[in-house]
Amino acid sequence: MRATCSRNCLAEMLRRLGQVQAQGQTRSPSQLSLARSMMRGRSVRERSKKKRVNDLEVVIERCKVVSKVLTVLDALKMEEEHVTPLKRLEILRPQLGLTKPHKVAHFVYRSPQLFEVCRDSRGVMWAGLSPQAEALVEEEARLLEEHSRTAAEYVTRLLMMSVGRRLPVDKIAHFRRDMGLPHDFRIRWVHVFPELFRLVTLEDGDYLELVSWNPNWAVTEHEKNVAAFAGDTSANSHAGTPGDLSLPFHMKFPPDFKSYYKFRGKAHHYVKTGNTEQFQKTSYLSPYAEARELTPGSQEFDKRAVAMMHEILSFTLEKRLVTDHLTHFRREFVMPQKLMRLLLKHYGIFYVSERGKRLSVFLTEAYDGTELIKKAPLVKWKEKVLQLTGYRGKNKNIGKVHGSSDSEDYLFGGGSDIGSDDDGAILNVESEDPDDVLDDGTLADDGEMDLGDLSDYTEGGSVESS
Image (tube, rainbow, N blue to C red; front, side, top):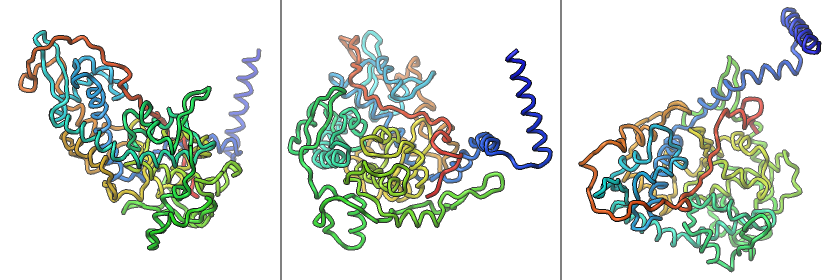
């Protein structure tokens, strides 16, 4: 009975809707909302295609190669003598995002200058680091040690910006490679600078807690850049209690950028000039000032969040982060719940790459084309690693967001199968114990955010403009 009633009600609703459309009457707000949601996916894809910055997508392709190769390199260097049975490297499949029929062995075979393969007397295949890779491992250890004091400053400044002046160690660990923290970050490094921070254990885990406030470090990188551009080289000497700032943010667009895109014959603006000018003139609290009294959703709140993200990205080696590493800190840094929407909203200050399963955000002012303007020694070290992989990049224009990428074609295409024998690339050696197990603790779990439909991160299917 109830089902029959429901079907009758539905039929009556559809009949009335048909009458309204036939008479040309105005749709109700709920009907308009339904229509918008139906075309949201296409609108987002069209917008994403038009606003793509090809140079930064090329950077992402290079980073994919380096990241995957470093995963294998890190696993091998944790092994005794830097050697392990090749088959046991298959434990790295989740970290590398591999699907059948691809195998970890493909990475090894595609980078012979970094990894060597040999077969022992029992036919067991082994993988190890090449002499060039061994030299790189030693160089990285030296560079991390030299960078340690700078990394300590940046971690301290993260604590200074946080609510309660403390952060979970597990969350800081997400920034380990991005900020140039050493491999023993959790065990040794957190105790090396007792004058800056200390390790405390609470009910929900280990935290790093600020020991002393340094007023000279409470000056944002953006303030320093603006002062340097104006010829003032003593920005730190003016440091005091953090308060209101009214600095505009540098906006950088590709040469062929258009401020709008067309969808179904209508123009939709990425950047509305009037709103952008108003946003740039808005004063905001310094990221180092107490912000708990700010009203979420206000322009002051949003601009402070932009300043916060700008500061965090400035601390990274490559001025780039995986977006879910940022979202982990929404509560600690008093940032909006819909952080992705804010990043997309301020296109020009930030650029969000949508390729693959990992969303990455760039600080656009830090790049000139495909190259970082200022390269730290650890960035140059990564470039050496990339050079030894043999990857050069083939695509001048990056294609579909979810299509097969240039880096994947390089890493997987034409790779030797583990079952095939390439005697020219394999050395036969004697071995005594091929049964050691690869320690799970040596593998870094770098969480990923599934892309899905970008409309999950936007409202109304388009990027809102300030």
